[in-house]
Image (cartoon, rainbow, N blue to C red; front, side, top):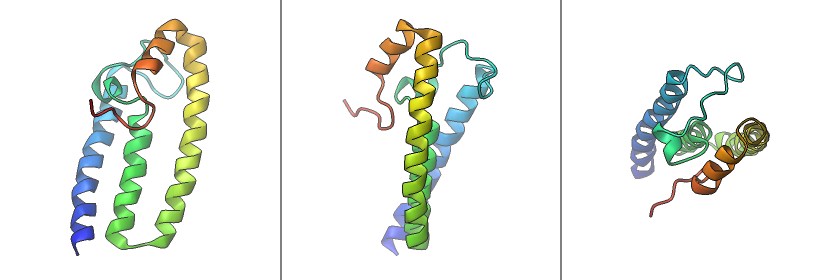
Length: 117
């Protein structure tokens, strides 16, 4: 029961982060690859390079706790691998489009897990 309560609380927090990331992305009028300017470095992107990937993966882990599901855990590992491949491809594109500005951002902001300090 305690794990389920933790899972429920984390689901709410991760959902808030996910919506924040989508809204930040939308506020830049950036939809997929149709518009890549400006480089988004505000909102959750100020703390983490891929907040949408991180939050959705954490939500799957939260649901795994809530439902006590081995299948969801296996699916989560597949999602982690898929998101990592996408993140690497996106980074290559952003490096090409923004050059040193993106490289500086990438050195400063972690890819998936925000720095505590």
